[in-house]
Amino acid sequence: MALTVSQVARLAKVSVRALHHYDELGLLCPSGRSEAGYRLYTQADLERLQQVLFFRELAFPLEEIRRILGDPRFDLRAALLMQRQLLTERASRLDALRHAVDAALDALDQGKTMDSEKMFEAFGDFDPSKYEAEVKERWGDTEAYKESARRTSRYKKEDWSAIKAEGDQLMKALAEHLGAGRAPTEPDVLALAEAHRQYISKWFYPCSYVIHRGLGEMYVSDSRFTENIDSVKPGLSRYLRDAFVANAERNGVES
Amino acid sequence: MALTVSQVARLAKVSVRALHHYDELGLLCPSGRSEAGYRLYTQADLERLQQVLFFRELAFPLEEIRRILGDPRFDLRAALLMQRQLLTERASRLDALRHAVDAALDALDQGKTMDSEKMFEAFGDFDPSKYEAEVKERWGDTEAYKESARRTSRYKKEDWSAIKAEGDQLMKALAEHLGAGRAPTEPDVLALAEAHRQYISKWFYPCSYVIHRGLGEMYVSDSRFTENIDSVKPGLSRYLRDAFVANAERNGVES
DNA sequence: TCTAAGGCCTCACGCCGCGTGAGGGTCAAC
DNA sequence: GTTGACCCTCACGCGGCGTGAGGCCTTAGA
Image 1 (cartoon, rainbow over the protein chains, first blue to last red):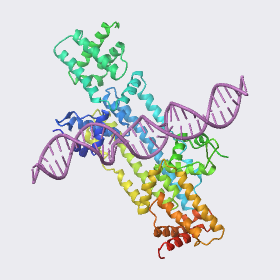
Image 2: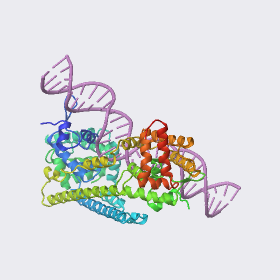
Image 3: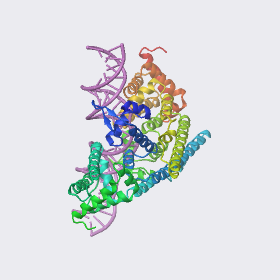
């Protein structure tokens, strides 16, 4: 059932190079490789690709798409509403341009030369940077987010799949301890919690014990996190929270 | 009355870097420099800038703008009509995207997950390359034009102003001979005609005697050429035609 | 008369979303 | 075993500038 690049490319009407590109960016990494190193895409990959293309059509930058799809805090509704707003603004701009072109044509028909003042009439009052600023404010309002954005934007060529694999491995290990009935306060589990904290610090943003504990709290209080994590193993999000809290305590952070 | 870069930048609301860029491309070279090498823009430069910005707003690539503004054969009406068409297509595309976003929002409101089929419904039937192809066909339909486009697209960093100066100098020299009452068949004039042919060959496209003669014919038969050339000196276009014809004849091309 | 600030200049690299080779391995069919 | 259609990984290029770096020029004020 696994598909090769060119098959996916045909299905989704994108170029093979684009798929390579998305792989490089960590935006869509095929979940498998053949023995010869061929990229192998699963059905799930196809779905993700569709989401990617959806946002791409909506003119989101690829970097942002990666963050959007990878972050369970992501607020789809807000993003869509914003994008709608953006599209509306663009449409009205296009309209203004059409009027400008029409005016130019009229002037031409009447044998007049276009005077330069008229040329600029339509272009005055439009400032695309306004929207940009808004977006930045909306999405980049926490320090951790900003730092994370700063760092992750540099990874590009580095191995995103490696980062993801590292995270998955931690989750899997913790899920196994949960499955084995170990308490979240046991040393092995605490060690894993600590490893996770360092993993976050290393790749995303400086993650203190306090912040890590807060992250754990979010895992249980925010359903988007909870669902995502519990899909690995039911109850894992609570388990993580408890482990993070215990790890913070053991390192001198009061609860 | 000469303006500096930053003054022009403020007036036209473009960046200084953009003006530098246009200078590099030969799209808008300031007509003067101060002793210290500062760019000095005249009123005429400002008008040209306005034209540049006009077409830029209409989403013409800069390279094409340069050709448009530099080529007296340029058909403003056709270009505007095309651009109108382009804008209309874009507008309808934006509309489709807006509907897609709305559909996504509706689905969200009803608690459904977006299914991937719907995601793609709006994106199927749009092929921007169609229009591209049309434009190419419309504007690039002669061999000389194509060759010229191929070559000039490579100049970029090279000194466009030097090329222009070389051409202007030839025109000026020929205009002086015309003013002095020399016949277009005199050796000096023929030499200049030949120099012009080689100038064209060197910078734009291989210009045979036959083609050169044809170019001369166009100078008198196409009013856009005629006006442009006669603005240097009245009657110059005819004079050029005659000189080119004589030069062709002297080199074994029958009339 | 000296100085500091704010022009101006020319390199030259960076960005994004890939296109387009180059140079080489792999797979299926004849 | 040979073809030809795939696949891989570099690595450069494009367009329209943004953004320094490093250095000269000009002008106003102390």
